[in-house]
Length: 172
Image (cartoon, rainbow, N blue to C red):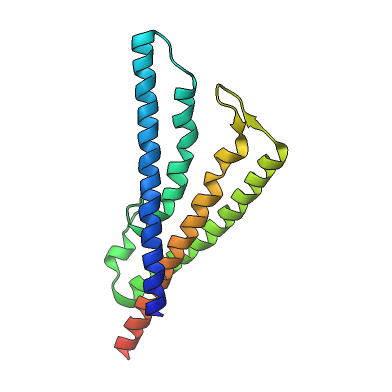
């Protein structure tokens, strides 16, 4: 079990670094877009509407895929009263319950996201502006993000189950 978890952690480690790289690239593109719009307005007195649209449309591709990475790195927003006070098996059981709930809810949101993307794909709606592209693309970040959250939460759940198993063995 520990060997399988080790491989799983290596895979999610590479995946988390890849997601962080994509998020950094998107943020860089957003900043560059806004900066070029400001320069264009200053120098030429006008700018392209797409420079305002790009950052707004790319934000979901930063937020949703980062949920799992932030959970794995323990950088998410949390109120850690009980996990900080509990020790041993009690702490481990609490974290198992928390990660199980995260997996269950993330699976439900993953399914809802797939349904939403399929709906907008079938309807053929488009975002109208200077840039015209299908609405379903902007909704794609939702199921992708929750799918990644499931992967990272399962890793943390398995890790905590292994920790509990080791604590039980030590006590026996």
